Image (cartoon, rainbow, N blue to C red; front, side, top):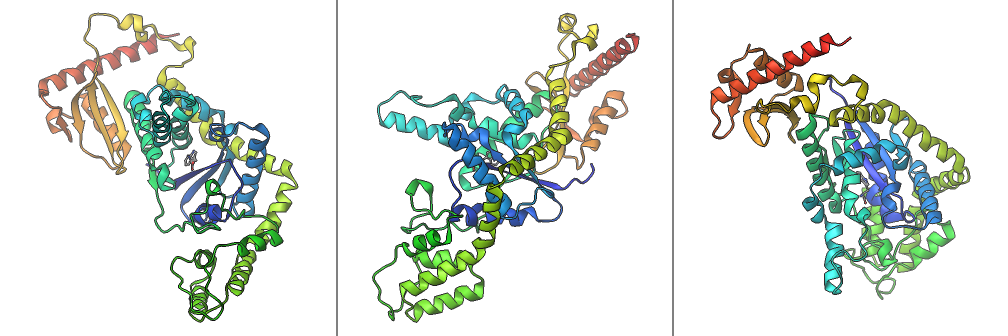
Length: 444
Ligand code: TRP
């Protein structure tokens, strides 16, 4: 297999206005990661996801613009990474349906966000699904489509999203199992070192607590907010502990190691809160100011952002999404009818021959390739691991041609399966292949 760069994909829900916590916890590290060598990065605005919560069209539009401009202002380079809007790639929605048809409903029942809604309803004595939209329920399937459509290897997410990545793996695996090996199974990457920033009141900075500092407020507003950070009543000259000081944690998130150490010394030396706040404001504003300027410029030219996003989606569709969907449609049988070979139609298969076994190739989480020979739900033969899909494919071909004996294959028999049975299944399969090839050759 050609060594393609690792694909890293992140979705950004387009709701709300970005704040310092989003910047430190998500935007800044993601942009740093987007510059890593040997990676192909995908950043997209998950605007379809945002509809699950927000149903105010004007706000949806404004938030999409603000978030796109924020990422560009913070340094995302659309010439180097894929930057696009989910709703500009209709293949994602189409794939959502294909995945919906293999996704286990029971798995979706266990999704945290849905379960939390049901638990709230039960606590309130309501119907389980009261006020729950099918959109909320299907959220993980849309997210799986986002990831699987570009065969992402790694998905950096917060802890709360890990379950969704596991579901994406599950749906991808089920699809691969039924239709052949189309999807890479993605891995969640949770950065344990990422800072969660405290908000104005010392609790985690979050829109739901109303304690945020929006990223691009004017400097005077930023200053006012910084000065409203909760501190204790220690007077100037009194030593102050850095532990549990929201002000200190905010400072640390923007300062070098040396400056942080100096700030800690100032705490020990009894710096006054007013002076400490002034220093924090200066520090934050120094990092934010150039971005704020770019941001204001960008939002004043929304048409350019629109063009950037459309261009990203257009190239991405041409390169990946459209060709993949063509393959998937073929795989599931949404096919051009003019090519039907009579020998292959369902009606003709309905003879009294036993059902054919089939080889399935797939990739495991460890990146190794495997195949198995299955007959309905029964596994007749299970291969060992191969480093490359080609090796797995060659072993299958050799088995079918009779060049590789079942006994010599790098594989083990399924539980309770006799070798003779496997041989017979492979012979029947080879015969059916030959028959199909002959029918095809006989076509005008
Ligand atoms: N659900 C993610 C969040 O709330 C956003 C998202 C949508 C996403 N699609 C994705 C993240 C695909 C990673 C990959 O943060």
